[in-house]
Image (cartoon, rainbow over all chains, first blue to last red; front, side, top):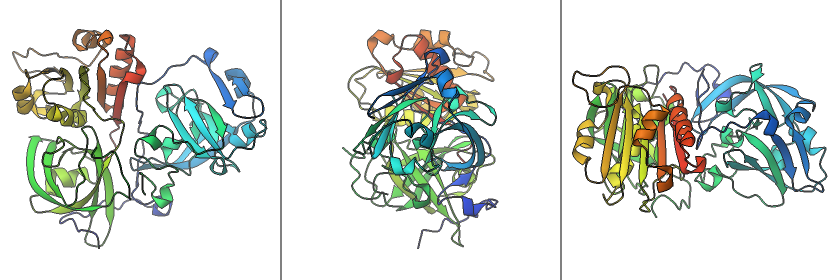
Length: 199
Length: 243
């Protein structure tokens, strides 16, 4: 029996509660959370690289734009407890990228401008579960939201959707990334409320 | 060290409000007695869970304001369209209860290694920085640049005045309205202001910036322009939606 807070009634205006994982609340705007300054990498210097396969694979911005892309409309859930419904993105599916690389890895470690990393099991980024997104709401993704390109793994807490992504390394081991080394859950399933170590 | 090794799941702790302090018309500090609180490090936060009579629950995260070893406290700003903050600022009183779990976060944390410290806070972004100031033994030089809208909005004003001088330098800027005779800064943070106040990058300072997204971006981008290593700048941002 949880402790009752005298005089607390709550807002309860959240109609779509079947789309809201435990402990989350809806927002209409798009909060920004980052551990450091916002990087500003010119597109001319931007590349996307997949390491750890039989051959390294790399794309320039123009080459990456030429890859088949998809439109994605999805709900997103931040570990700081806000959720946002029906966000609209365009990006390249990880299925598309991984089909171009010969490998037998089980995990990836995404790396980003600014030094950020995050780890993901490949079973959580394949079969239509993850993208490298570069448009948001029909516009190029703003730097504060991770532009020019970010990971989009909407079924996990949003820190897994690493901003300013520049590539990932395919590996056999699940190696904790930045937040995963700083108290946050190794996987981060919002429906299981896997926020912190031990959850 | 307290707060670093979390072995099991962080449990929700039965918590009682043992005191409340009006900081500004919109901001209040709550002193908490959380049964079994494991301790924390300066800069960490905790989760609050409120439960209504019928079982409805709402959770939010708040920065811890107290130093390790002091009675646990959080300082909360009322967000007008919020769900939890109006309760914590306006309703909760001594003897009331809710649950907390924590401490949370292992990155925006100050470990005193003797390097000078530059703290940059906007509005209630000063709260985790205050936990750092309160935990300082005074031997490490600390500069705080603190931006508020008006003098009335300055949180911890008297305590900062009292602590200044003991290894701590405090620089206020008031962005909206200044009292007559105001001798502090009177504008939003910009590169010139940072250049005047920040330690030279060659001093290898530790930097913590906390505030709204716009504020944090202005401060962090400005420090990078001054030659700070981006990896040395730790930021914590909140939108207007903490609730």
